Length: 94
Image (cartoon, rainbow, N blue to C red; front, side, top):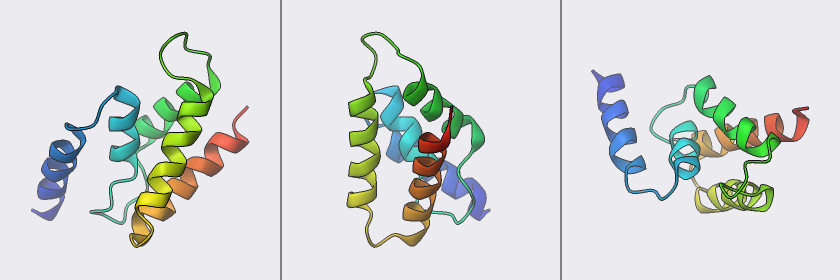
């Protein structure tokens, strides 16, 4: 039951975000559960960070969104852990 409620809350909260990248970043780092970030969301973030998507989102914006998310959730241990996992994967991806 709790998993279904978390999914509903995650989808509701992410629906108010701006672009697709912000939605995926929020879903990957949702603080309502202690599971690792979903691979499909992390892969989308890595694709945005690694590939030059013309006029979609720049590398600076990706880094800025990630750092803003880390700074805005300083009290949420689960969210910060997920963001550090994502940041580590972005920095070590080829």
